[in-house]
Image: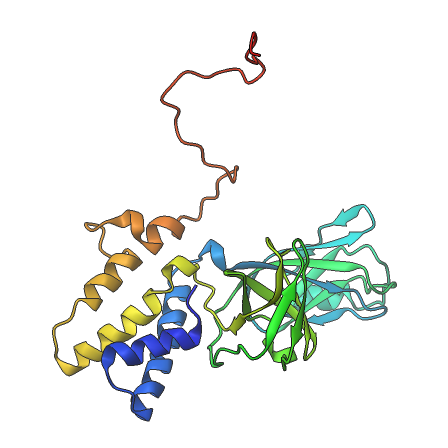
Amino acid sequence: MITYQELYDRYTALTKDSSTANVALGKALVNEYNQAICGMREWDFLEKERTFPTIAETASYRLPADWGRLMDLWLVIGTQIYYPDEVFTQSYWRQLVSSSSSSDVVQKFILYSDHVSVFPTPVTADYLYHMLYRRIAKDMSNADYSTGNASVAQGGRAVTGVATVWTAAMAGRWISLGGLWYEITSVSSGTALIIEKPALSAVAGGTYKIGEASPIPGEFHDLLWKGPVADYFDFKGMKNPFRTQYEKRLGVDRYRNMESSLVYNYGSSKKSTSQVIRRRSAGRVVNPNFYPSGMA
């Protein structure tokens, strides 16, 4: 993964122009390419699930700031899951809610502006709505942060800092711990934060880095500096290899090596029913229950 700061630092180094104007241009171009790539297809990597609790006697809820298109909505009450039907017209919705109705079992919902409204109005608080949606790419603006040290237990999600000044605004950014990147779910204090997935290995008072990153898969973050650098040299009228490299990595030229492109690897909207893609075996299948015998 390449953080936002690393992207514009690389742009500055490759263009050999560290002027304030060019650094600002590099930052703007990184965001423009990020928006353009994320908007070119309905990429699976833009899908995200969030939860929000019911509020008693409240029917309207604000959608996440990065909400782009709702894909599914369901309510979990104990062991029961309820899938409401979407209402598409305001006239039908007004007829539906013309008489007050309250129940924890949701039946209908409607989207308008940046809110989702449900029917009937919930009676009980703190049941969880789950929302699957395709997010939009927001502009990046924050430099990396690495002051102090951080610790996390193997399998843990709580990260503790020493001499750190973490802020609530860091939620949604990424933290590097032991060479692996984890998305930050929330920050409760200047020395405590929660990561989305359990840590694969323990880190005790180690160095770390918190950075802002594009939702594009990390192995293709090079697109976000190759495109801007190509723009810089194209504007100067100078020959450079970066435009060809960018197009090859993006996959817009089907006559080049597609296997290493973003479109080839993530462009299909069809999902595998299995997360494991096995190679064909060149040999015969051996029953694992046939254990070796006669061995000392």
